[in-house]
Length: 456
Image (cartoon, helix red, strand yellow):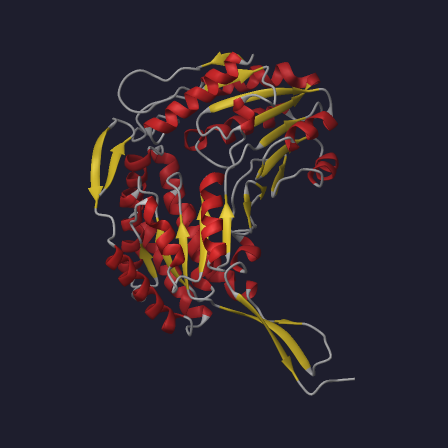
């Protein structure tokens, strides 16, 4: 059984039966059968399906949002926004997939040569708990529009969200089995990856788990995309507009109670503005109410699981022991549920646990840089390379962006994922890209066609 604990109360919420081996095989077989017809549909037909699913998400937006709020603690206003963003992703690919996958003519010694983009088959998406609806559509919208079918393995802590996503396709009138939910225990994931009818894998989660997925998929010679952890820097230089930078960085740190791969996890302030940044971020964070995520007045909900809260507390404790100065929070809240207070650590150095490890929670840390070059060196001194933000002049920011070892850079703005733009990391933050025109190309056969006779 998949047993769900409500992180707000710490009490059991509900149970879902995990698939047996035979049930897993049956669902994969259904996906393969659906692929045999889905791959022959037109872009217009596929787009109509995704737009119908988007309409279904909006029609029952509150129901879907409350599932996230109850299963993993996402504040209700953010959960409502996530459902809307998932619908937008579906509509974006419905409108743009044909353009993204257009046949590309390439000159050669042929009379005509080109590359066409063909579907592969059933694609497995292995997804985490922190954004169940958004990450599902980040995975499935491009894959479906490319003509693949999708098998989604949700995190065991959000099985209700997984069932609801499958139901949304059914209620929207989608062709049977083009999107199927696989409620599996984590120990059974390797079996799904190895199944001969699963042709590719998309994984979002921790770097350690991603390494295991990569090894399993590679052993089967199957393509994979990994979107993994991060310790994203937000660099604030002396010429930054602090009135814009400080509230934006604070927001970036605490979305989803800080449980986001692309949150601003290391605030690196140049010496001339360091004190202002520390005080400004402290002022912003002090405003944020923590409590029941069903109450729209609360900005911060619980940590998703007790073990994750304990891990976060350990990271904070070890960083304070190493010399960090705690200005806010710093200890788990008493009472029911898995709450951790908004926390601010100053005088942090890059060798502390709060920098070298990924912190998943509402913990902001501020480092002091001697100058812009030192800030850049601190930003790159990480095993991760997911995203970064820079606050400075546009010209200076663009010059620095090329020197940052990350897959995504925001200059004078918040780091976010957007269906129109590719997203992904380097180093231990991942392999491949999702979203935008690049993401849809990850799970297609880029087939070269050469037509004779040969030309001189």
